[in-house]
Amino acid sequence: MTTPALRDFLEIPYDKLEDMNLELKAARLSRTSADKLREARLKYLTDEKRIKAVTVCFTDLEGRLQMLDYDKKFLLKSADNLTFDGSSVRGFSAQHESDLRLNVDWSSFYWLPADVFGPGKVLVFSEVLDRDGNLYASDMRGRLKRFTDEMFAKDQVLCHVAPEIEGFLFEGRDAERRYHETGKFDYVSTGGYYHSLPGDKLRAFIDAAAEVQRAMGFGNEKDHPEVAPSQFEMNFAYSDVIITADQVQLYKLLCRQVASNLGMTASFLPKPVTGINGSGMHTNMSFNKAGKNLFWEKGGKDNLSQAGWDAIDRILTSADDICLILNSSVNAYRRLDPHFEAPNQIKSSANDRGSMVRIPTGNEKSARIEVRSVGPDANPYLTFYTIAKTALEGPRSVADEAKRARTRYLPDNINDAIRLFKGSKWAADLLGEAVQTKFADLKQMQADRCSKALGALIKVPEIQFHHEVTNQYLWSKF
Image 1 (cartoon, rainbow, N blue to C red):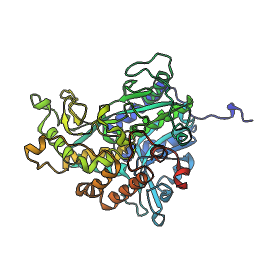
Image 2 (cartoon, rainbow, N blue to C red):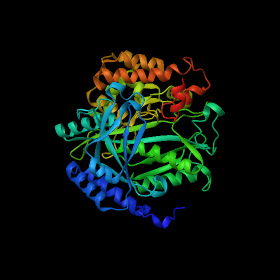
Image 3 (spheres, helix red, strand yellow):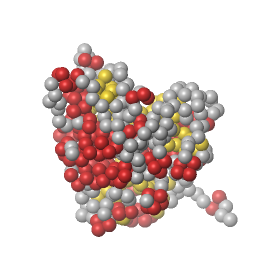
Image 4 (cartoon, rainbow, N blue to C red):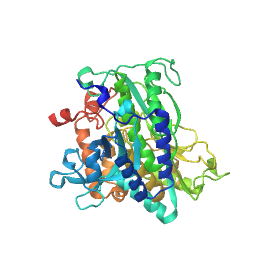
């Protein structure tokens, strides 16, 4: 039996972790050169003998986080030639084009809580390149990074995002994966909005997950139980769009791991249980130039500038075209139910939470638009890229005032959303026709495994074949 004394792997206290991760986050925000950050991180890995492995992450087209652990010594020798088989990732690449490469983004380096991720590990995100070294078209993190870099280089404009990601906590490990056997989810709490006892299971989970977030430099703001039983929300700071998208992936990862450690399941299904509120990922976005919030105008309608209203107009004009991106699963359309405060109306409002876009109360720093119709299972890189690019470059409304006054609604099922997405010129402009087709085909494959007419009750296949549920074996048996 190996004794613990034989191991000397890196374990950093939570308070020190927070300081280290916040310092590196500040370097990203100040746009420290990539070469300088790469040099510093490689030197650190070389000098720190207590690190055994580097977890390198990328995200597939549907939004699943993929993780590879590289031995530190191997990575230091081979950092410029990290290859993997893309055909092993569902929908990512065909067998004949399977060789892909990882391009590590050293600015996205994270020190990790050892009790959650294991001792002696650090984590970093990467872009995906094709075998010729070009950005792989289906890698939406790379697409988002290129878009925002070009936007800054052209006009010095920055995109800032803050998501509000809701989830559910259920009894037992792997509750989603076992749903086809049990047919139900068991709540850990029925307290409801803002309510929980200091020691109950939901509060213990929220506290533990918030500690991990804080240690990883998220910049925590608030956390609380949500409206539905066993539902939670943990908010973190507004930040650069790429940092925020990375943190969305880490947020869901750490929530799942903390829940598993406690013998429970954190679920980001948009509507796991019939008859209660679903979960969303409300996406708050603004653009900043030379320290000025471009969406703020004191005295403007709802204190929003013309640039803000133009962004809203473009998003609403393309609402049908981009609905599949923002609501990318069969189950997501359960949430767009008007009986549960669903943001399914294609309109904007300062107060009506049934509107797709809301204008929150803000000031010169916090003025923003909030796209409420996003599901928590959406690919954050693809979602933020789509909203940002649509807000700045999407088609404008040409409807007359009478038509504009009518309330329009988002699709209420994935099949209609797929049809609208496939026929959309704007979706083709956003993604390119090849990626547009690939994404639509992935979503159609998921839709074909579920009832076309869903009815009122949630069905087993929409959980069983949900793209975020680790059910690869069952997918392959279909």
